[in-house]
Length: 335
Image (cartoon, rainbow, N blue to C red):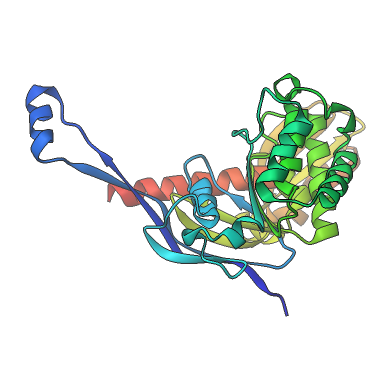
């Protein structure tokens, strides 16, 4: 039976911001009677992550993903609800928990820019009180996996973005955490660096069964690393399941691609929605139930040399899902 490592129970975070009235009179009134606006960055978010899972945590900008990660890390206190990480309450920030988890934020630097990478890691060793033998073994293993052994003596500020992110990963994993929170770890990286980081994370998770919660706007990160995804928007969790379930639940169409050995007749009307049309190629989107009829129509309409039926790309599915959520939120807000 799987063991729950992370538990979020109706986790809620409400931010209050002062709303200043215009003009001198408004400023004076604000001295005696302030008005505040409340926004729910996280609204009763509940989920569980079990031992060894690698879970994608997805949502548009401002959905509440980072807020939830910060509450699970103890960086933010929840307004209501509770959470448990490795059996500890992160809101109390126990030292025992700090030694067993790591939070890596792609847009934040944890290393000292004016020090060589190795010296920066040495400082982390001292902070965590890591044994010298364990430190050397861990750094040796991670630098080999990430292929940055020749960069250890380079100043952090002189490293490329991809190299810096790899060093940040080493720093985050230096104390062998059992839980890893990753917030946009591949943001801004080139395609090759993204691939390297994904390969490393996949191998590291498989080797050590580290519970990993990943937020990313790059769907390739999610597709290659996560079997399960949690979707959140406007602070509310509205889906928790596999990527395959996302496709089956939120799409009712499929993509048909056809290649022709001779141009289609000019008066040929393709079934469904035309996504791309070229003299010898056609790409359409049709309802799932209409796939057989659409294929028959294409075969009858021209000399088909190749025909394939595919699911709508997961990136497009997610984009549509959040688009619908945004529309639903606007209707709810205006009603």
